[in-house]
Length: 387
Image (cartoon, rainbow, N blue to C red; front, side, top):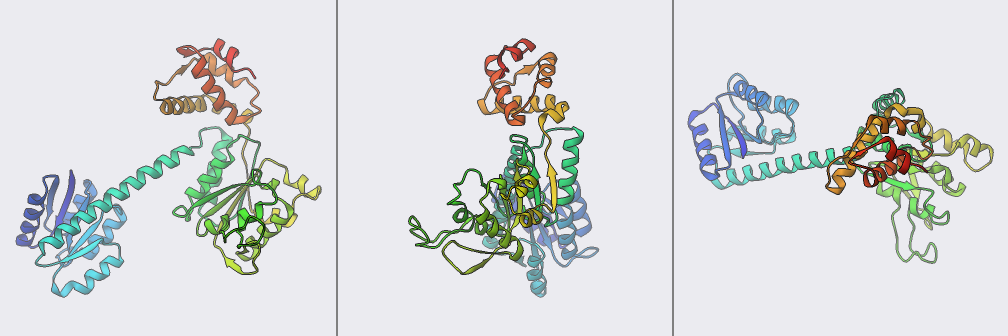
């Protein structure tokens, strides 16, 4: 049922609006407020899917109600009700975030169409929020250890800035989770996050993948193609395993960072890009620089902020939380009941040498859920978790 609030000081107009909406659809629950102050109190204390608000009212006018509502519950669409002399103000309220306006006396078809459209928008906003929460849950950073708490604190400080971040750590530690959280907590979160695994792309194709190419640039270039930097324009690009990038591609990435411009392979035309770069590597880049395999100037451009993700062996106190998280996730994926792990089983897992880190732990948990008993025991761990 959609809940609608009508804020209107003229009783006759208010009754007409309530009658029209109530009779139009049984699923509309319509409430009234006689002025702006009462309207704001209702909005604070209840959840509405739509607010219809008069512009000219005593005590608190419609513009003030709109401003207050956008601060306390910005997701509620507001339709302004304007008298003949309020038309300019009504148009201005749309610039302030109102969904639409209707004139007095209200035209029946326009009123109902506006209400339907506004409610559809609210449903879409709610659906998008739910989807975003689901996406965010996929990249949860599980753990309460000091090392993970420190990383979360750094993310909170760094994410809202435009600073470049270099994430280091062994394979399987969750460097991509840090990159996703940096993006989701940034001002660019409405834009895209483009991920590029530099180690998975052949060296002869990496430049085309990153910067695109023009038709005829090389044998298989049958048409113009945009690269990942262009695709990430306005958002974030995550260069994973950047330590595996060729020196030639490194030079072009350096130019992109210095000038915010790129060139497609085979073209001399500059393309301006607005991209935040986050990079990650499992290599010691300082040693790579000494060996001549990584550019020192690029390193300093990337490593404005350094975040080192600890190995699982360095945060064993998080293993009980991770076991619970993966057990729930695997049960959900398989449509089965979550399996319990005994205290001794978890203690046994905490004593292992996790060379594969979180990724390895996840695989072992799945193996134990499939092969272990009704409750995963210490003996199950000894039997099935061995490497």
